[in-house]
Length: 70
Length: 157
Image 1 (cartoon, helix red, strand yellow):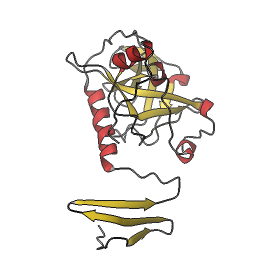
Image 2 (cartoon, rainbow over the protein chains, first blue to last red; image 1 turned 180 degrees about the horizontal axis):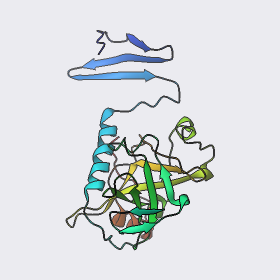
Image 3 (tube, each protein chain N blue to C red; image 1 turned 45 degrees about the vertical axis):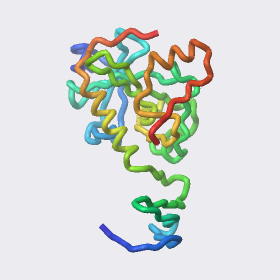
């Protein structure tokens, strides 16, 4: 992993079209700005982890008879 | 073709029921081949893995209980499975059925988008805070029937 040290308002370029900037540092929280083309999806990693965990939970159910709804 | 299923035993399926996820589902990246089967309890359907007969997901059309649901994923993501127009897309949410009496929930944060014509599909990630991985289907259906507009659920995006 490449590790770079940056100060507030400094940026990192990923390729030529993605810029990551350090907007604010407050205690143990860092506010990060991402400028990227529309087709590059930017997410908190927890979002992927949540969806993966939910898929696993859905697959783990042993129920083969489904509830009635509606 | 005849397939073995988790819930329905051996079932004969049509080519048209097949669905292919080139990138798999999150957490199931190596499994690409599925079939969409009707269940005995509509509006639920089974998304049955053709690679592992013991693996099947229950899915539902999310618009049934959340008519306000929308996918704002970027066009490029749809292009990956050949979708150019909204009419080409079939959308399903994976349902989690707990073993206990906890509510049956649907994942609106990571819906499945299927290209109606090619049957190529993808699980997309929505960052809209209105959608979470656990929407209580029955409760949200009741809110809707009650005519209330305040169906917004706090997400975790």
